[in-house]
Length: 510
Image 1 (cartoon, rainbow, N blue to C red):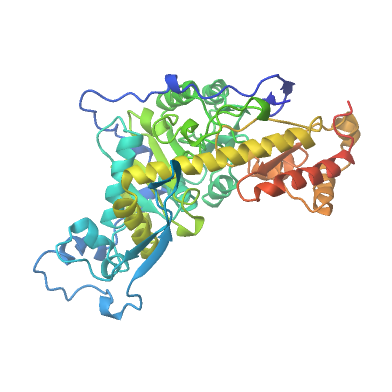
Image 2 (image 1 turned 180 degrees about the vertical axis):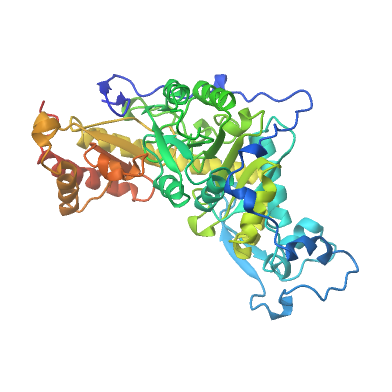
């Protein structure tokens, strides 16, 4: 039995959460020239103190044709220790043998030290003599160009003056986004259960957090409006709303389109900047069906890039969305490479922050990713790769839920995730372990110890509490489980071990 819940009150239902209605989410294209973003610079926070480093101001002259430079403190490329860079990657072409389609052989991607004669500026930027050099804070030209094309194709931001800037992944991007708008003493609006780094980033920047109630579909717009409309007069009004809208970490919730529109309208009404942290956006997949009724077990049934839910960026007519994307969940976490899409008015301040911290992602990462996306897969191959990845996660999700229903039936409540990597479960604790009867006992700590004793681990829910004092939520009966990293053949044994641990606590007896 699959259940739905509002993360506080649980009610059983006989069906899985509603699937994404793809017919209702066709992205509307702007048929007239889009306007420029609103002037939102008055919302800047600590970033107002940032400025371009003096030497960077001269970069525009360093590479002018015919320029003889005695100015730059750049090592000469002849001193670089790396002469070429190669990687083996999956081919996105399908081979057909005896009428049966199968993946083509893997491909070797090699980046030379010098660009080939006659190379254009994009190819020149990838060659190691350039990509391993100090560069601009926006990233190498070839990667910037691909990302702009991709953002235009998938999100089609409905205002004119947007652009991208590379980051060292979404954790780096989140810190930059928070410090761009936030000031010590401000409030960051978050889901009541959220990505822990968001809370830690807020705290390290001197911000408070205000959690907003959720249900199985994510943040509740009415709860957000209630919070904003009754905001205490003695507190600074919030300027920032943080969301993981797709396959949310930790709950797996995905905001439906109507909620995205409602939340965006509230951001307009209350002049909020939305930080759209969306690393699981491309990991949307076909709806769950019980194994005996499954009819969508194919790669063709996955959304690919053409049927993804519209992002907040795609709804953003004002330029008030800071969208954070990353290659971590879709290529490799160690690439430490991602990008922010935002209004050009914010871009200089993000560049200034890069210039005094990471400068730009590793040249190795940028070079190999750019070569892969621009010259090997290109946009069509990238789309195919993501669809294959969706199908892999679809199969993982299905097997995990099948096994969860078998082994934890009656012990927990859960919602089938339509995207991402996580399944959020609520323990059916008996009344003897809740309320005043269990007040003097660390029930959730005892349950965690029991899990460890059975050699299985899941993350206690209070680690994801949307407040800085997480300990106050330590007895909330939730765990985050993940189906991304474990081998599929381990799902059943892991959930069996979890069941043995939970049965010691008489779950579901009431």
